[in-house]
Length: 566
Image (cartoon, rainbow, N blue to C red; front, top):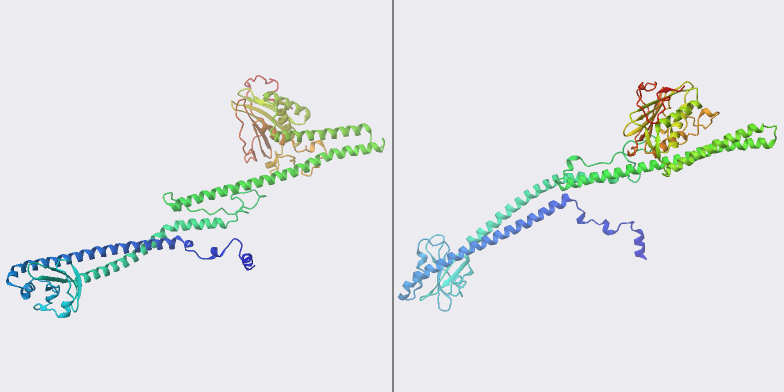
């Protein structure tokens, strides 16, 4: 029970092990100098120990060699006196010779291995004899030339050897104090040098490591700053629409000086910058997707609202006329009622057909494709517009370097031009000049519809090709000239895009021009571009100049080319 209670009280995702400090959690600034310092200490210790052992072995070997050489000289000197009889004083006469090292011991051994006589060379004066205790410290040495270390009371530690021959065995020894002093001084010097060197090397390493880790510290700071950013709620950086979400500041990046590819820290910094670029790209893509979804939902809601209203209006009119006819013939003339019911029914039918056409185009169901002549098609549309609205000045211009042939559905292309002309007729005053021109090059075909009317309001221009877009947002249209359902330009744009083309508009007071670009037969589809803009420079409103001798086209009627149709 107590263990379960402790488990419940423990913070989620953390354990005592996580909260306890760990040596692995130290920073590189502390771990690297420590590691380098330990390595230097080990190297210095191994080096000092090696030097000490080698030097000690060398000094002891040199001392042993001198002891052996001295013993051999003494043995050689005493062979000549062996026949005279055993005389210890004569055997130790070599100590009186000049050049003997201070502290040299000389002695004779009896047959049992005991020192019978021994003397030492003092710092000054003649050699003096050793006392019994000192001689006893030298007993037991075999006369075989082997080296021994003995401590002589009052004299110190010696390296001694004994050599025997035809006479007495002679013992010689040299003091080890000089060698030990030299080894001690060597150890002191090595220790001092090692301490000073380690201190200097540690300081230099600490400074160098800190300087080298500064770029990595800046990389870590940038990464920490990015990690503190609210990426789950962050919007992509950069400009956004006025109605869109407010962007967050740009994510922090590592400076260019810290992205040197020649260093590991620079490679990490460059990789972090690339990752931040990917994060911002993902945020921007997510923002665009969310914005597109929001706009799509908004368009869908507006489409449903507008479609419902557009369908409700004729249905309400039909229901009203039916109610009047049910009340009796005195309420309304039956012929007038049936005529109005037929008109509203035709209006509702047209709206439904337009919506079905847009739905088919949205599904990718391309129109029927065949060879179509834009010159003849546009000419027919202009003639139809003149017959419908003879209060406008309709003009047609054909600027053809080659026959204006395209691959597409002729009826739908005719509908595109008819919708643009109907739009010009309904939204411009009486007497407005509307110029329709056709241009043909080797790669594309261009249709332009230009008028000198009041222009499109700037607020309406960016969404002029959206569905149910009308200048009158109240949906109240007292007569047929006050506007349509708001689907004409949307249908024109959808049909143009289905044919691989693009449509655009430029508008300002006194000049509005719609441009339709279609690829020639055998040419690829045109890439979509931003073709909705308001011109800053006024454009002449007169029709384009035409040559008095236009280039002949196989399907162009001579009586409509470059002529006024008012």
